[in-house]
Image 1 (cartoon, one colour):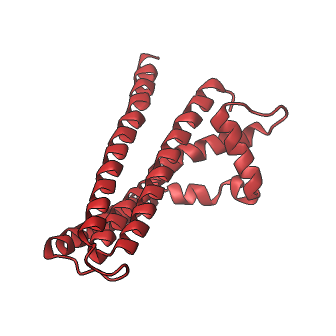
Image 2 (tube, rainbow, N blue to C red):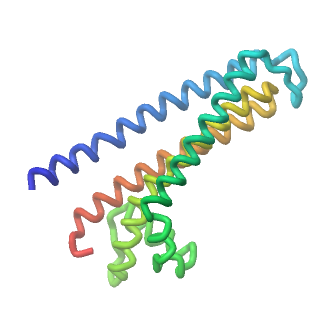
Length: 190
């Protein structure tokens, strides 16, 4: 029992630690984006002429993000999570039904008479989603790299918005996974 308490405490601290680093990384990406947008003001809105340092940094970030995505996909396939997800009964449900189930899990408020098997499977899928959401970090890094490669204000703002969306989705997946773990702990019959 002590081991499970220690594991749950570590799991409770880890996502907050990730979120702090992610917010710091998002702030850094935002500052770099503003710097690129201000530094490229002599160019046109759609065409930028990046300096050599921006081209090198953009290429490096683009490749780093791509490597993170590929490694994450290979790791997920080797783990077998993609096969387990294909056989899930949740795929047979409509989007609105899945959204209703995930909302019940996130709020830790199962509806009376709700199918407990579906609620348990939804909670486990939300926990598993934490691993696959690492792909979003790769998308965010690639977006910042693209902003440096194009070095034009329009594309910089576009890729900055894409990076912020990826960060928001990643944080949402982490928080949803934490709530799903709490849901499974409070409802051990699932």
